[in-house]
Image (tube, rainbow, N blue to C red; front, side, top):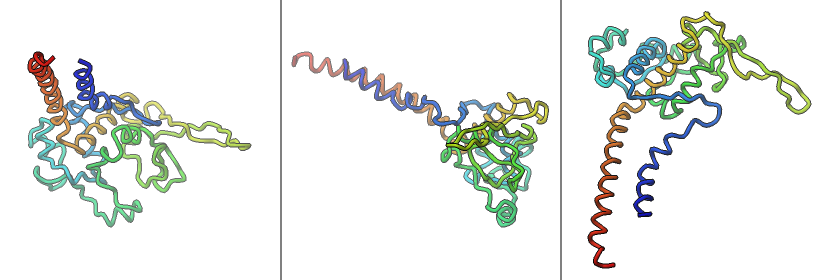
Amino acid sequence: MKKFVLAVLLLLAPGLSGAAGPQGDLMSARVNVNDNASLQRGANLFVNYCMSCHSAEFMRFGRVAQDLGLSEDLVEKYLIFTDAQIGDTMLNAMDPELSEGWFGAAPPDLSLTARVRSADWIYTFLNSFYRDEESAVGVNNLIFSDLSMPHPLWELQGMPEPVYEEVQVGDEARLEIVGTRVEEGSGLMTEAEYRQATQDLTNFMVYISEPIRAERERLGVRVILFLLVFLFVAYLLKKEYWKDVH
């Protein structure tokens, strides 16, 4: 019986390990790729605020329509603003050479960012911009300093101001940025609405990094349930075979 319990725990181990919280100072994104409403809102934010500079070259508009339960007409009307077709990949119209001249580097493709960085990193990044007059683009970020891009969602959030705190370093006291604050009413969204928007955008970026994830997770649950049932049947069968031996 002990071996049976151990086998069950081993089967459940991957699911248990996935429940661990974020490490370090990252905020928890709490994404859910099965939430179609969130993914649809995130898709709208992505094409309106990210695709002016970035692309998602490994994702097609048609796949987004299929997975998110949207008609092709809706996608063409609300998510495609270029001459791209429904079967095309999600590319922007920015010239890479021009963007490199403007920002110092061509904006990276965002298809796999969630897999490279993690959902919590993206969510924290979107909530960590602050005004920095010394920066070439006028802003900076708490977890990605000296970045060469503007705050893409400043219109929604308002422009965050840095919050300083005096820190003692040896014999020297200096000011360090410990957070940000946004003047109420300076953006189109309240703080709660902006947090929800960045969560939706993060959710969509997690989805495009692995479009099969929702189906994979559903299939994984079924497989584990099948294995548990099979394990129980195999255990009973083993007892039946060996009852006369002992």
